[in-house]
Image 1 (cartoon, rainbow, N blue to C red):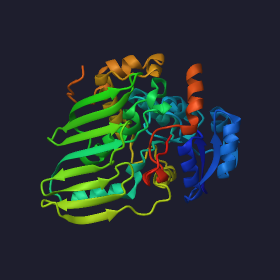
Image 2 (cartoon, rainbow, N blue to C red):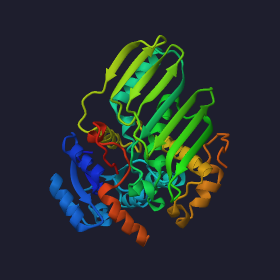
Image 3 (cartoon, rainbow, N blue to C red):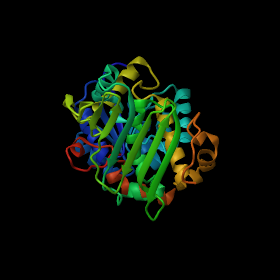
Image 4 (cartoon, one colour):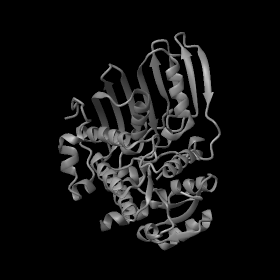
Length: 386
């Protein structure tokens, strides 16, 4: 591609605003357009961030021939239709996490993208950051010996938010927060999981507010993960090895990595480099992929997106967490009842045997999406992301 990549933002919530700011300060891209469900929201957002074009519908946004890449920043429940709309109109896509409601939706999207020869990427921002590479370097150095166990947690008091509370919005802590702890474990230990044990607590709508997840890997490693929409946690990840351990400060956007020896003495500390917002890395990765004509980014390949969704499908199955939109689209039987819902090659044991929707989504758009955390949130303020 020549010149700047023209990015269009789908959605006008807080996270969309962070992306608009990011695009202003990132080389090789321009924030060309924004689309909303209403003309007024689109116009106001465009004015606030100095965006050239605005559209009062997603259909008109993706129909603009000048748009190269669509950034989808809408609630989880809308990702499948929104991404499909962009692909059918020939647009490359960067879509917020959780990428889809379930693995089956993601498989369908990736198949369509391949048919259309288009790039589709899940915006799991921590996988694109320099600190992820630094953590891998530290582990590869052998400073803590052989890592055999890890713990990770992420919690915010956000249970009252519609995107968490409501089944029709793909609610619950798992897709919003649990996706981060699962990705952390995946980055450190890989994906050869043989057992998943999970337990949740719920709101009155059947959406999970606390998630406790334990993973066992084929080589005997274990990961103990917690996600909460009720409690504020320290957001830390700890990797335990035969000669020491590593503490990651804020698994949602690694702020620092501290290495300790077997005597609990600090032997090294690595501070996060200065960021614009943290989203610039995923944008830059998409630009590289487009320039190289790749259909996925190596930092977050389709296989990783599918694996995490596959595990979340299984966790939802064992805890009876269902979304109405899955039943309406006839995906419930495929995803929750079929063999494909269980982690592939896993022998997992079950320990715990659109009009009205569009209206809700429109009302939610001002705070849309999950708690992928903005730069301000990492400083302590709670912001919505998506």
